[in-house]
Length: 354
Ligand SMILES: Nc1ncnc2c1ncn2[C@@H]1O[C@H](COP(=O)(O)OP(=O)(O)OP(=O)(O)O)[C@@H](O)[C@H]1O
Ligand SMILES: [Mg+2]
Image (cartoon, rainbow, N blue to C red):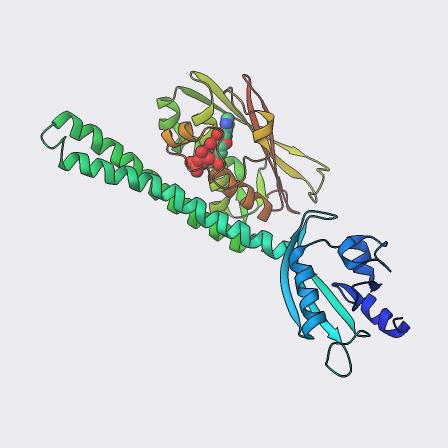
């Protein structure tokens, strides 16, 4: 039996704790253990609660040798999680005997594993994204040195392709730097006021050459008399530049992009008045299964098409981070064959004019 005050103490522990006897029967499970693994483990072989060879091996080692053991296990059932398992002999004479009890503690490390996985995935993605253009460049250099050495036409074409790949790499590095900067700042509310109407007018002018080249007509409609929001101008420029550039890149040929600015009251999650910017294109749209994943780093619906357009798939990840930092919202609505609307909602703050 487990002493009452010991069980109270173990119930206050944040880790899952079991006490078993030398035959592996469960004598005690604390509250966290019951939450994770159910309440039926008492008086049953521990294996029936957690069936994992590494865990059983660690327990047997402690029972047989009296040593403390530790291991890491990943479970699929009864819950999908990873645990750091520690097994200790509870004894007064430090030698294994039939009457010894064993304490097993399991610390949930799923979050740590998830963060680590994200980090390794990210490094793998970056390496892959950089390796492709570098391999292409190396290939072009070889061709220019060899077969295309005296072919003026081929040389021009290869130099054009090399310039495209190099520009894309520079673009990617600056996107990666932007992403790491906004991630580092994401917990701090931005200071300053920004006039979104002015900012959109400026971006429209900056992108006009690209719009003409891609045969897109950009319409900007600003309804409110004041369009100031709480926020950093440089960061918000990145948001709208990315969204409008996407609309130009992925909108249909000879089509119109409508940008509409309006205000809203009582938007969920936003204090006070909100400024709404809707960017609608008449492009091919985005299928439902892609929409939720668009703001993931490097996610592209069609990798080849995006690459051809010099895209890296980091744009919307940056957009989402900046909007979150500004305590705003990004909504994506799209219909395949009709077009997409990206709506940004930003808190206007207490002052409504400046
Ligand atoms: N307006 C849009 N219409 C259709 N698809 C879009 C639109 N905006 C984005 N997408 C899709 O979402 C993907 C991710 O967009 P994102 O802006 O993150 O990357 P990108 O435009 O490919 O590259 P970057 O922005 O880094 O130049 C794009 O590759 C494209 O497939
Ligand atoms: Mg983009």
